[in-house]
Image 1 (cartoon, rainbow, N blue to C red):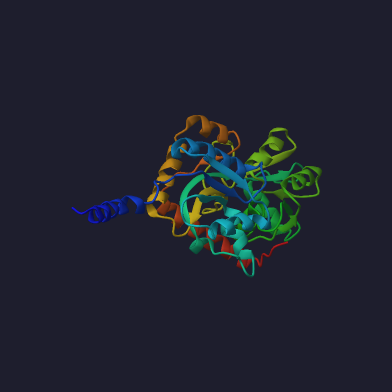
Image 2 (image 1 turned 60 degrees about the horizontal axis):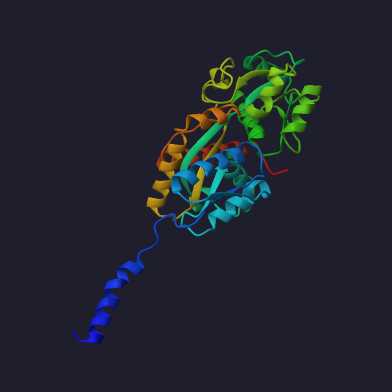
Length: 320
């Protein structure tokens, strides 16, 4: 074979190998979080990053991009290259609630983000001031019906999980409870203890220490079933069938991310959920693993968007 022909043949033979994309992952992966460091969402994201670093074999970094109620981080990931290197740990508030409270949301969670895997979820508590004459969920409903709008509930702001849990409760019980927004959960709990508020739906990790200290009284949990973190408390659903309001955390990627990469990440989250030590550590914060496939999580997220959208519309909820 002439030298020129041989060179051409060798070059052609090498083209398929050169055209093959690098095996995923070939470089570090970044998980964005729409809240500052600390708190449940950040804790779940950092646990996921630690475990995915082991299973993917590359560094998985957490990038906290707080602001605009989580919209900055979520929008960034929604518009990122769909290559598996930019991911999001999102929550109910950031993806199922806040976008529906905005006149012009920067992205559509159902269309612009691919649900990779559910990671974990945590119930909230229904707690009351110690002086409120209510010892059960039925008592709270009876009081609210007897005094429409007079019972007030603190929250960390319009659209927060704490607020939406109350609004869902009010809608299903057909009562009127007045929301009082604070700049965070902590100051609201302080006023609840002090008697300025009647009741509240704090995250379990935030409210349970005050319950154990006897500063407020817990009546129920907001999950559909009783929580292992507080098994002595009934679920609100035992009084209001179908009631379920939980903070959930899941892994998302930009829509268009290759299916094999989504499947790989989903399988790695399943491996993470088999870690007994991690399960116990998160469980101490009232956070339980939330198993499910990518398809199941996609269906769940869309159902949550529909559920909370109705609550927002029915109650004319807007951002503070």
